[in-house]
Structure formats: structure tokens, C-alpha cells
Length: 393
Image 1 (cartoon, rainbow, N blue to C red):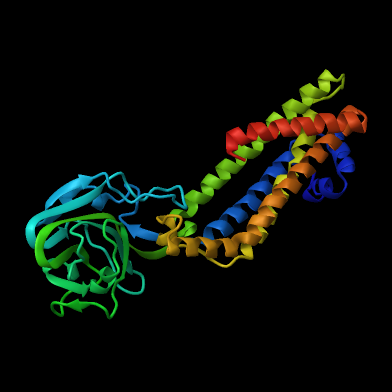
Image 2 (image 1 turned 90 degrees about the vertical axis):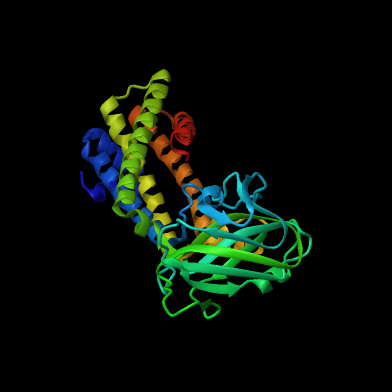
């Protein structure tokens, strides 16, 4: 059996199924599996090459580890780990923020500083380095805003650093509320202590707050990340991702094929049908050519979309934040066509497959169309339910 014969299932299913039943060779389902894998690989490759995720340091696998471990910091303040953390309704399920923030508290002074070391070397140079630094700050004492706020970034050692005033950022800060700070790196806004600091070797940072009057101060910091480079799924996972797609595709097709064949066989037998297991297995494998069509449709629809960027503001952001909402809405606009095709295409394919199963029963068991549709559709619905548990379909 050749591919043109198998494609007859699409436009002349009865004729194709009769040929398969008369000559039940395993070549037919093997060819369909091969076609499905090629189509699924194409869909996976197009999807992975279209989606770009903004990378971070730390990478988030251990959440915001720099603001969960006070031993990484030095300060003129008393340091402690606090359960007062950034929270809210996240857009994505991946949790960047942990269960603690760091609190820095001083008594009877007009200055509070905190310094982070031991982060390794972070490349913040243009054009391929990490181009932004973001963190969340919360001032719980005093009510008065700091008069001056300075951020320093160290290059190799504490004597070689870049520095920038954050006074304008804190001019509109709210007492006892988390403020989201995002600072552009390697820009003209930075000054430097000498000509030696390099943006490609940032090794630590220091924040300093000063007030016009002596008081008790407490400042919390959470969610500290460098971020910037955008990498696709292919960049990140390469061939390992595609190999996983192949393995998952073979498992999905094979399990769906065997379960559906078993259901139709036993249901047909219970209605008095006389079926040959081998012929029925081959014909039911032929009905799953619809999986090939669905993968191709999804691949073509995805290929029409321009690159989709998932910025840090969305990946680690919360509903209600302006930057996260804007990024989410932008992605919705870009992918709305793919979502529509995927949603309605899936429904059409499921109905089509149920019809093909019914035609297969009619050919194999010589039942009436009513009985054939009852068996074919019921078996496929049960198969879908089982598949939803096994594959999350």
C-alpha cells in the first residue's frame, strides 16, 4: 500500500477501508504514523521557532534565589527573611517569586545600604547581553520618602562600578506598597567611577537610600533579576526537544490506535458482528490519518504568525500590572488566528474521526449505518475521554 492509496481515506473512505480490509498489511498504519511524525515535527519546529522567551539571571528554576538568601548580602542594616512577599494572580503558571523576601532594618540613622555579592559574572553588554535589571522594593518605615537613592553595579570589584540615581523612580513611590523597578543597563543614564568597568562582567550591586532626617528604616526587596536576551525553544532545547516530540507522538498515536481498535472490536462483537482483528486493526489505523491533517493545519496556521515574544514582565508578571497586561494583550492579538484555527480545527477533526470510525465499522461488520454510527461514535468518545487523562488532550 502506497501513500496515494492511504490518502483515499480522506476523500473516499469506504473504498479505502475495503482495500485495507482485503489486504490488511501493517504498512498502511506505519505510513500514517510516519506521516503523523513528520507533520507533528513540522508543527513542533514551527511553534518552537516562533516563540521567544526573555531569559533571566538567575534563571528562575530556583525562583528569585538572590532575594531568598540573606547570606548573599552585606548591609549596615539588620537583615532577615520576611514572609511579606510579592503576590497576586500570575499570568503564567511558572513561579518566579518564592515564599520570602529580604528585609533590611536600621535604627536611628539617615542611611541604609545593601550590597549583593557572589552572583558570578553577568554579561550586560550590548547587543546580546542582559539589558535590564528589575526588582521589587517596599518601604515600611519611615513614611517619608528617601531623599536620594543610588544604584551601583560592580564590574570585577567594588572599586570599578557603574552608578545611577533612582531619585525620579522613588519620587512617586507609595508607602508600604511594592514598587516594581526596571532599570535599563548599558545606557547613557549611567556614570562610572573610572574608565575600567566593563558591562560584560557585572559581579554585584549595591543600593543606598538616604533621608534628610534620622529615623528607623525598613526596606524589603524581592524578585531581583537581570533579564534581556530572547531565545526560542529551538535555541534553548534544540534536538532534545524534537526527539521528545517524536517519542510523544509515537506513544500518542500507538495508544490511541490500540485503545480505539479494542473498543470498536469488543463493541462490534457485542452486537453480533463478525470481525477479523488484524483487518480491523489496520482499518482503524487508517482512520487516524485525521491526526496528520490536524498537525498540518496547526503547522500552517502557526507559520503565518510573526515571532511571539514573552517578555519578563509577562513571564514573571501579575494580572493588573500595566506592563504585564499590555504584553498579554499583545500576544493575544498576535495568536488569535492560531487559537481560532486550533480550537475549531480540533472540533472538526474529532467529528471527522468519529465519522470515519463509523464508516470503518460499516465496512468491517456490515452493520446498518445507524448501528455503525452508534458504535463508531461511542467508541471514539470513550477513546477521547481516556486520551484526556493520558495525554491531556
